[in-house]
Length: 546
Ligand code: GDP
Ligand code: MG
Image 1 (cartoon, rainbow, N blue to C red):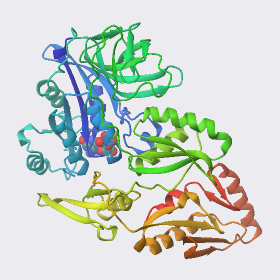
Image 2 (cartoon, rainbow, N blue to C red):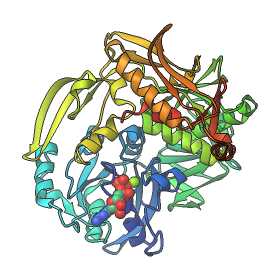
Image 3 (spheres, protein in one colour):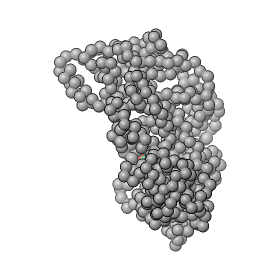
Image 4 (cartoon, protein in one colour):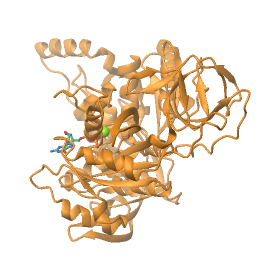
């Protein structure tokens, strides 16, 4: 396929502004999928994505598009919008020459719109602003165009107004992709060179790597080398993603596709690695900055007999999501396990859910902690979170962008949810690391009938220990089902108890029967601490503020 008729682009936006819906329409209009009412975020294939209605994993689709009598190959990458997954966006951007920057016509520019814009801008990609949801009653595309002009310095004439839902003007988006985004700078005459920008683990075929070919060509049977480990492999299968795997004979410079080359070990297909032909070594591409874990939590098997199974599940899932860091760890109460690093709490929850749904693993997660860094942010509700205001910019007469320094600990669990509900969904938020700062912190334990609950041990600011301890005890009291005896719930600093609650016991016999039945059903989901049964999901809910 001639390189000058290839376009590589990704769709970026704030969460819910319509990236995946636009991807559906682009797939339909180019015949990659049949047009039916049922196409709803077809690229969101994971169960967790369907249940939560969010994109977690970037997805690639190659489309054939006829424009003025010529056929073009468009490689589209749909990306997640939530701040926790911006690492997926930066990787996707490195395989592209342009982006569609989607902005909701009703909500206007939001925090991740700005964050994602800068990712594309810094990578010097062509940016096509697309104003979506113009069908909504309160849509105000004029105002959004002014915001785009003011905040991003992009002339309003460049904006395309669409409704991804109804398909309005989506053809104009395809034309703009062809006319405005340059083809990749790659030549089939050069030696083969490809960037691994994503990889998946398949139980039967081993590693499936998503690659962007920066030069030359590769075919089945070729001997390739991964620059990172220097190991050689034979190519078993390759092809395009349309969006399902579509095997081809060769992949050429400028194309985006997948490759399977007998990589069996999860560490063999590093994201950001370069592949080349054994007989034609090339210099490795720059790769990516490794993702920086911000939130750490312990993960343990429900039962030590499940250790080996859980280890292989974690290994496989971290190959599919290399932004997770893993270290072995062990605890007196929980046995052997791991300490995992995540990009945020949603990322941690999604990882946990994927372990359970895709790998059938059952895990205990300890209280997330942060490596005590400060962060930049924007909002209200900020006063009691130890924040310091940095600056403030008016985007227009209705919207303001504020920057604050926050202790990461204050925002990691529930800040995002709280900000959303306080502002009725209008405020949005993004953060970046601003380094370490000294603070007066102490370790606090939560005890059940005198036994410390490891999952709930936290580090808190001294001034907040009392109120946090009290709130955690109250929430724990509410989330433990009644049992046949009294339970003492305490918060303690060292040996000093700072808060104490007692639950009433179960009561009459029918209640006891019901309780036992319910507990038997939920057995797998319970964890025993001393003589007390605690539902697994209690741990996260105790950490969230009301
Ligand atoms: P993403 O998070 O950016 O991928 O957003 P989605 O594509 O998942 O869309 C979020 C929500 O907005 C879904 O409920 C869509 O049905 C809805 N949506 C997307 N595009 C439009 C549109 O053009 N008009 C309207 N009214 N709703 C839309
Ligand atoms: Mg999406």
